[in-house]
Length: 496
Image 1 (cartoon, helix red, strand yellow):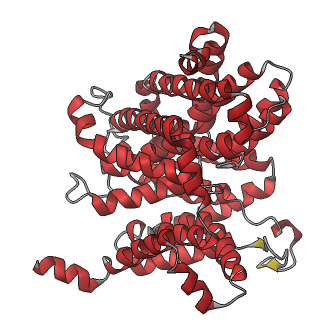
Image 2 (cartoon, one colour):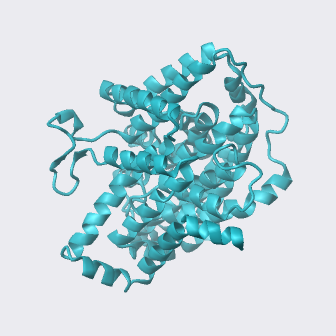
Image 3 (tube, one colour):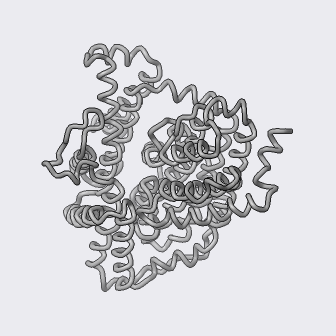
C-alpha cells in the first residue's frame, strides 16, 4: 500500500501534475529543435529549481527528459534533421514516409510506439532494477567494445546499394570521431596543432550538417517539383497496425532498456542497434528498409524511449548515471540533499516509487501531446520549396550554434553539409558517417582499457574473453552477424 501511495504522489497533487505536463510539453518542442539537447535543458533547469521543493523540481525535469527524447523524432520525420542523436535511425525510414505523403501516419505510429517503449522501460525499472543493475555491472571494457562493434555492423544496413561505399563512409566517420585529445593520454590526434580541435568535432554538428544542410542542398535540384500532398485521414494507428507491430516494439524496447542501463551508452546506441535488429529479423517488410519501412520507424522509437527507464536503473540503485541526462539528475539530487545509490532505496524508498509514478505520468502526457497538432506539423512538408529550404538552412544554423553557442560548430556544420551533399551526389550514404562518429569513442576507449587491463597481452585478452559467458555471447552474436552478411551465406539461403 505504501508503494502505491508513493507511486501516486505526482498523480494526486495539482502542482506536480501541472509541472510534469509542462515539462513534457516543453521537452517535446526542445527535443524537436536540432542542437537543443535534453541534457542542456535539464542542466539549465537545475539553476532555476535548486530552491524548489525536491518533488516539484524532479517533476519538471522528468517531464522534460521524457518529452525531449520523443521530440527528436518530429524533425527527423518531417525534415530529415534528427532533433537529437537518438533520432538518427528514425530519419532513415521516417523521412521517406513523409516524402510519400505519410508524415501524419509516421508521427502517429512513432508516438504510440514511443509510449509503448516508455512503458516497457518503466515496468522493467520498477520490477527488475536491482537485477538489471547487477547485470550491467558485469560488463567489462571488452564487452562495451563488442557492443560498439555490434553497432558498427549496422554499416551493412545503412550502406544502400554499395557496401564498399558504406564501409568507406563508416571508416571516415570513425576517423572524425577520433579527432581531438586522446581521452586516456591527452595526446593530440589529427589536430595538426590547431587548439580549437582539442575538444574534437561535435557529433551533433556533423549530424545536422550531414542530414539537414545536405538535404536542403539536394532539394535545390527539385525546385520545380510540387510539394507532396500529405494524407491526414489516418493519423492514429489502427488496432491492426498496433497488434502487428507490437511484438517488434516489445523486443526492441527490451533491447533499449538493457542498453540504456549500461553506463556510458544511451538512447542513440539503443536506437541504432534496435534498427539493425529490426532489419535482420523482419523477413518480408511491406516496404524495403530505407524507403519507408514502418519497422524501421518503430524499432528505434521504441528503443530510445525505453532507454529512459533503463538509464534510471543504475542511477537509482547504484548512483551511477546511465547517460548524460541522468548524470545531471544525480547532481540535482545531491543539491536537494539526497544521496543517489543503494542508500537512497533504504533511507528514502518513497523517492523510488515517486520517480516511477512520475515517469509513468510523463509517458502518458507524451501520448496526449504527441498526438496533438500532428496535422499542423505535417503541413510543414507541404510548404513550397522556396520557403522550406531557407527554413531548413536557418534551423540548421540555429541548431549548430545552440550546441555550445560557438560559431565554430556552425562552420563545421556547413562543411559537413557540403561534404554530405557531394557524398549523396556520388551515391554515398551519410548514415554510416554518423554511425562512425558516434561509436568511435565507445570502441576506441574500451578497446584500450580492455587491452591495458590485460597488460597489453593479446593472448590474455582472448583467453579471458572466452572465460566470460557474457563476452562469449556478444562475440558469438558478432560472428553470426558477420557470417550472415557474406555472399556464401546468401547463396546457401537462395539454394535452401
